[in-house]
Length: 425
Image: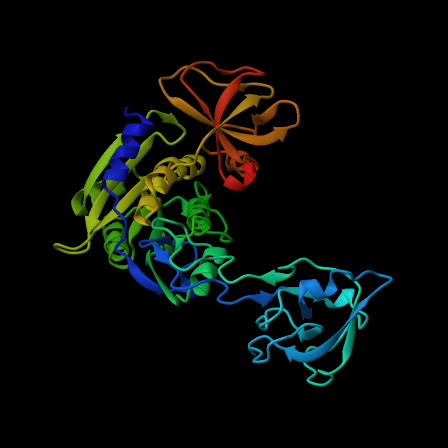
């Protein structure tokens, strides 16, 4: 057997980031940047109002109070997108709406609620020569968004190897960018193998089981931000398997298969992948998910090598093999930085016990991780730990790492891998 670290090293050595492409911002969410971007100008580009109200000189309203409002002459109305050419003098003010440029001569904004008008229609162009009473003093800069307050000219707004999210895409748009250079989301094909598999809702014949692995893996790929491709269920037929692999490598950036990767004499997946690609077949010293295969199949002679992940067929083994081995490789394809390939573990205290037997392997127990006000992070078993017991995995939100031995007793600290970073937030 090989260690998990050794198996993961084989995977990462065979996965290289996909070549960068320039994509519109609208389709780049969850992609990893292949460039750093600096802002060509300040954001916002000019001083503007943060409120609907009146642009004033702070000195003019310094004595204003609820019982002694200061009267100002309204000489202009300033709307968003329409700068005011008039300079505001002492004793004067301008109606102003949120986002509108600050006129010359003023240095603060009084919200409309703090004036005697109480409300007004910013779309109205009338009444610029009226009088408004201000009953709240304001400091210089009150309710004013300064030019460059968010981003200064030349600031790096998004770095290289950063995962884009809606806010970062908005920052790029604010910096005047319509496109960004990214590593594309890997297009990952999934097919399951085995004559015993039946897709829901078809009735089961004797000896048949439901195909759950494809559903789980396609959902895991989508959750990771990859583009999953359902390549279907492939029977235990050499010709059908060969056609499925060849079709998959032509249309996808990576392939994930389940079943047929152990030591059985009828494991045709092994036969076909050995014929088509350069594969490494491993028995990894973990439980579940001991059998695992990884290699590359080229897109035709001299074509790009397409990584192929051969996962075991048992449902829990397949999902955990994806988590521990396939996910890091696919994230490297997507351009993630090395420190982001594997989920960071936490330490948690066991409630009850997590039992196991010595067998030379590291066990990954399905557990429920939660925060306790007194003990910090705590874990308890999520249920049955068999590699076929998918219901326990469905109840779990983390994996407890149990080194070879007898497991962990009540109150003992163990290393835990959360499935989702939001658990820790």
